[in-house]
Length: 440
Image 1: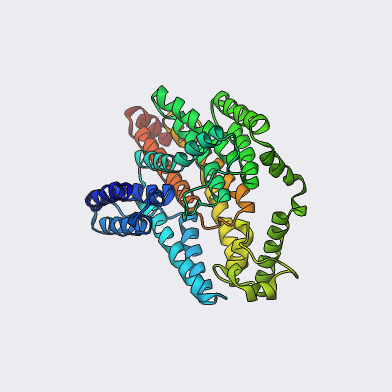
Image 2: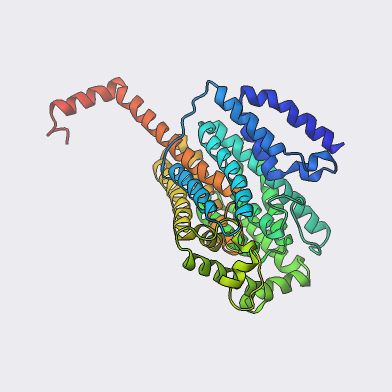
């Protein structure tokens, strides 16, 4: 029954997507983040819904009369350079077949990231895309929080099987990145009932992160809590959520959770910590031997590569760090492009905050830039211990930082232009030009 309902809904949106490609971006985001097809039981589980919607969206955009302008900036240029660089490293990958498959997946995500740059060109579109991300990932936050409370924290909270967030660590990262977006919507929702619901959603999502049993997730949650306190307006609600989640972790979670989190004090002495360090050493060794091109996508899957570049007695495994994974797969230049992307995205948000701080009409942009920064902090901090270098949410948020900066600049220039054209300002400007010394 779920399969039929999902199929009817998605196929029913296709004509709308052809006429309005932005709807396709929303549906693509819903399918990519929530993975509703992974909650089905029949043909829908393996049907390529995401790719189908992406193709229809691209077709609709191609024939649409809407502007197809890409807001070129440091972020958009770096996104393109990073995509091209991964294509080059794939030609020289140590595992060509696996690398080409991963490149195809990455390229499909990047196409939709550039579609985001093109289609999200107004405040309303920014707002609704954030809503779609929050609804899609917040579903697992609310569900996981209720599950954790109902089971006394005895079972791990996991994402939908077969999805990008199936692993408990990946889900914890995604939820940490979603919390700030929930806070942005809470700050700008006109209805009290929606604000209260989002506050409850933040609380349950925080508890769900505890329920994942992810040690990286716990670190990320602590960092996000601090960043939210520093970056958010109206800190009382934030403090209340932090206190309740902290009390839940300290007094509600069972002994096995406390014991697992306690291993953070001596992470190097645990099997998980030791194998993580071994994977970092492996990536570093690959990069030192192949500094320009690295080992290509999924080089960690090669047993001969581990025997050649890994430390003695190392256990082959995924590289649990967004930075070390990019270093091993894309080389030093690839890591430099990746780091530059994170820096440029952060800088975009900083510029928006600076320019919109004292403009009441752009208070929403100030808050969105602040919360995007907190999401980026969650990705950069929690990702230190996770292999989520090419997480599509992080790439889309980088694109949103570029869109927000471009839109904010357009609004400021437009308001300045209108202000200069008003009669009073024209007279003052003419007087200033006629007597520049007196005009200051």
